[in-house]
Image (cartoon, rainbow, N blue to C red; front, side, top):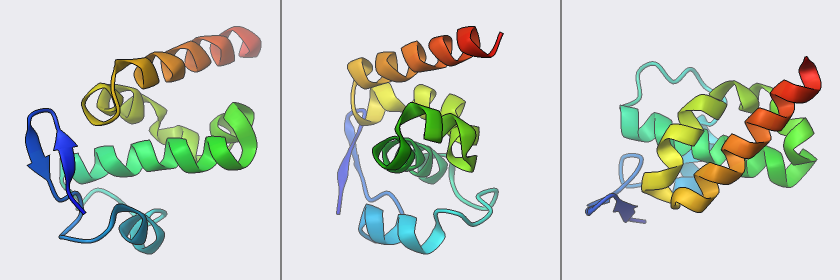
Length: 98
């Protein structure tokens, strides 16, 4: 499954479907992945955790550990509006925590 990363079509993880790759490697150590693969997985963490437990669940689980990577990758992967949603959630989470 290919998608657009900026202007260039990319097959995100070695030719695999994004969700198949995420299920297979989503919780594995990611240091050996390319930056684009880490970006896709960070956005996948965002989607998966927010869908299952809302932003509270996302920030409390390990998925939230990739929030800064996700917010940086979102404009190129899903668009600026999604990045702004995550930025707003990060700001609100910081305000609640303080």
